[in-house]
Length: 103
Picture (cartoon, rainbow, N blue to C red):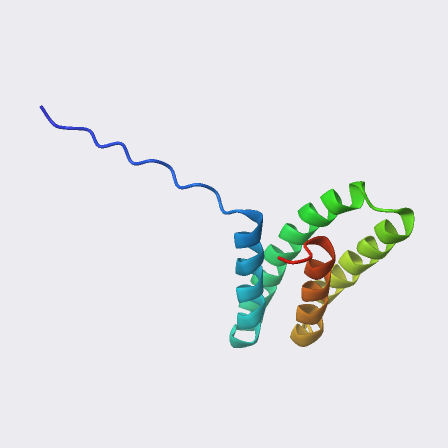
């Protein structure tokens, strides 16, 4: 009778591991084709939208407004025909510093 081996599911990445992956994606944006840049920028935006929304729940009105504006700027940068990767990257890193200080 064959033996069944149970392989445990890997644990989902922690928030800090996700932040590390985002930083790696940012570091590699310049090496990608335009399509690759847009693809990774969309993944980064999806991650940030989820986590910025969480951060906004406990933020003051002024901070909520500022976080929303930062996300809007990133969305517009992503939607450009030829995205400005350095500006996008700098803004993402600044936003990460705001929502995950010390990460």
